Amino acid sequence: MKLRRDDNVLVTKGRDRGKHGRVTQTFPKEGKVLVEGVNVVMRHTKPTSTLRQAGIIQKEMPVPAANLVLVCTHCTKPARIDRRVLADGTKARVCNSCKEVIE
Ligand SMILES: [Zn+2]
Image (cartoon, rainbow, N blue to C red):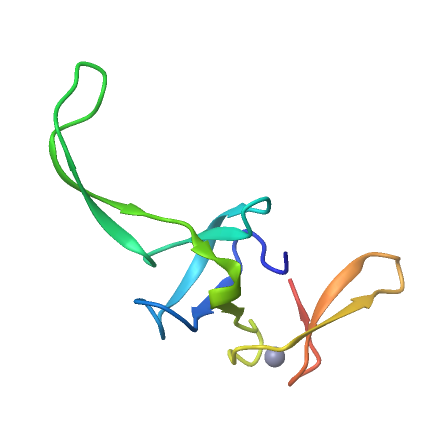
């Protein structure tokens, strides 16, 4: 999977198309990620002895990584990503439009 935690992504498909957000969690097995403010659903919860308060809570649901593109931190465009091995042997993702390494 190309996305990592704390990546800035743009949603390209689905209900939240066009939204930007930060990746807060990844689920590599499912190919999904959790993005801040994206795919928020309302949950109506009843009070239980263990759980917080009742009422409507907002919850983010994982989004398929295929519906997201990484946004370059340098040129702020949705980036096409190249992978490159740096001089010290670490693998890096490189933005195809500005050629900067994306952290
Ligand atoms: Zn860039």
